[in-house]
Image (cartoon, rainbow, N blue to C red):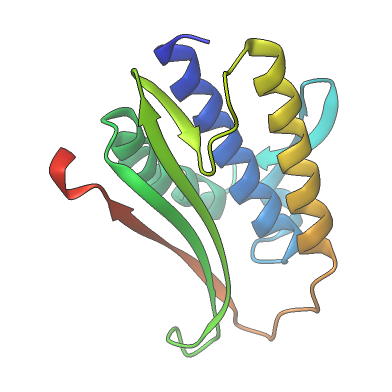
Length: 155
């Protein structure tokens, strides 16, 4: 897997993961999502026609993916907040490392091949969805935000 493919795969993984979290937790209306294929598995991503989904994707593009492509994103936290916009109800954290131009999720998982990445991608999404769907319902008015941390030496 070359550096460009590594970043593209990670972008797709993040976008699907955030969409699956928002869908499973009821943070957006159902029409904010559309089905997609991820390595022959039906998953959800954000629909292009919904304003909430478009805003989430824009935040991903401007902040997360920009920092990821420049290799200074350390962690992305998808933080679910109560209606008061202060109380943290849930947090889903994705941590990243960079080696030789490639981006990796922490912890490192050894040498990366295209087939290994596809299997890991599917397994990670399945585990995330299974975990998130077991959580109790959120209270009314819950929302989410992104919190990013960076490798200072790369900014």
